Image (cartoon, rainbow, N blue to C red; front, side, top):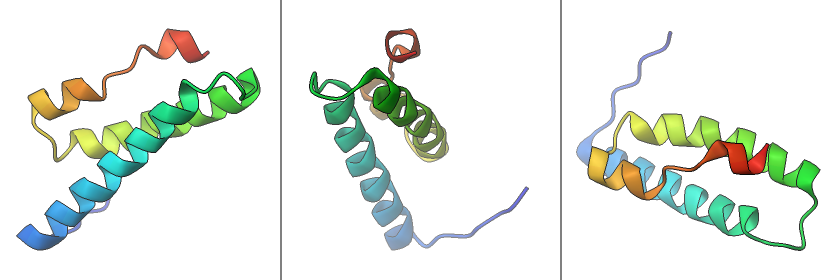
Length: 73
């Protein structure tokens, strides 16, 4: 287990970067041109990034990015 201390400004930046990454992956997961294997890989990465975001986001913000993972398996 590792711990990191962030300043308020760094925490806001971290929040922003994670949200943008989640948004991009959601767009990719909804893209019909991508193969299912690629979508599975994106979904695995989404789960990791989502858990990182869950550590700093409020439940209201987190619900926006909740994903039904059964859809992408």
